[in-house]
Length: 114
Length: 110
Image 1 (cartoon, helix red, strand yellow):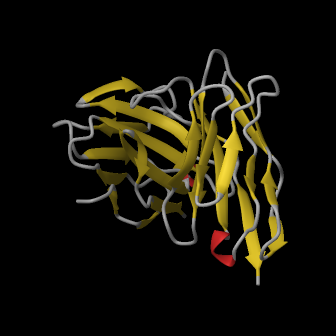
Image 2 (cartoon, one colour):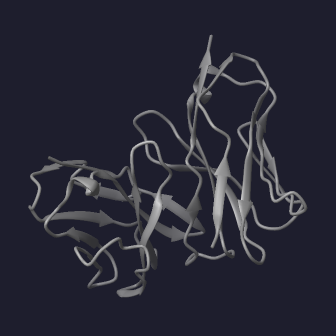
């Protein structure tokens, strides 16, 4: 079946540091890939997505590239801010569409200190 | 409303009690999903509706879990004879262009 593996956390960084959060997946076919973020006290929000190989999703300074050859979708940001402190989830859906259920990784907590 | 709403936000139940969790999706969204998120884990799929039809219930962990969406809008997740292992956050998402999640209901079974 489909699965998503995220690097172990938590991660603590200083403001303006470079961020990489690793995510790899197992799926048949051509899944769509997502990063969701959960800020303290809030619900899950879509951060970015990519629907086919070599696509790059980007939003709020975050980027992730869909790498089919390495089955990866690592999240990066060049300079983190304190406001980026949150829990980040990598997820996949088997296909693009409104009726496609999501498979999530365990999530990783990011704390950014001033 | 502007987003997905869920009620109650918090529920404490004694083991063996029945609970009902409500989800109000974004108006006009045909697809609705329920997920269960245990502490320290990612959400796990429970069930999916398209309008009033429950098309996938493969993630429901036991026959104590039941979901309905009788008019194709509001959905209710019911858990009968709750057990301690049912303690989790229950998330509802409705889908148009992408899935939009509600704030969740945190269920604690004592």
